[in-house]
Image (cartoon, rainbow, N blue to C red):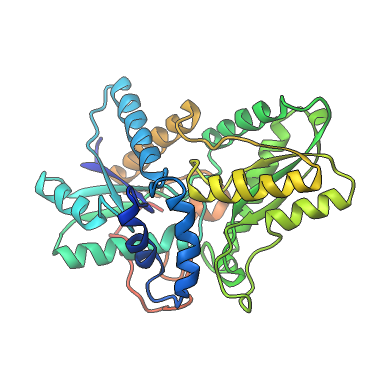
Length: 356
């Protein structure tokens, strides 16, 4: 690469043994006032799977795929991995990057869509980790990439495979993580509600690429709500949506976890178990499409974006990424994907000429 010395894959993290489950959940929810009984309930989802979250294994698979594709292009790009909430800890990854002599780092988030929890919070983590470790690095964060052609193509293939199980048109329910309505409204620059808009744009492109006679209708719905009942979160929940579809006479549904890049806990628990159980109770024929994972089109999209951002950074020019005009013309500004609970909290500052 011309400008960056290394690429850091920054992910959410997850436990990899029963003993790690409760500390992991307490770290994730610290300062949010989540009742202990709620943590106990969520812990059962992990303990039922041996206390191991699938997300770390899926990040390892993505790192291997990225390494292979970089090598195939003749580029030996140093790749590192850090987590927000579990080992390998972000601060340790940054220390290793610095110890290995790298100084300019491009960070790739395992979150494809813009929001506080999917973008700015990670930049806050980067700031805090550098401060905690006394680490002097120039760090840029890759813009949200959900609207990239490769992400769309991988989802089209997954939905098409799921539709093969039906001999009549099916309703397509695109599913993403529910977040507070206020957070969604503040996502992107200048309260652009980029979270919903970007998901809808991707869903429309996926539907347009599929055979129209295979689709009865489509919708964007949500899962994994975790906030207090008095706080408005994005709706409808997938289970409520399935009930509404059954009441309307729909008999076939494909659930598409478009908001997730891999089959981690929310997908396995909220869709494969809870939503599938709801569908069975309602007499719905339901299938779930795969996530993009290590689909070649998705991995190639990430490689393409790394090289494009590196070229733009080396020329000190704005990076023209996928998506609507705001993503091509604006950097992550001070108010982008705002922290509504703590507006003054410091986040990783873009260096002069950063390419967002």
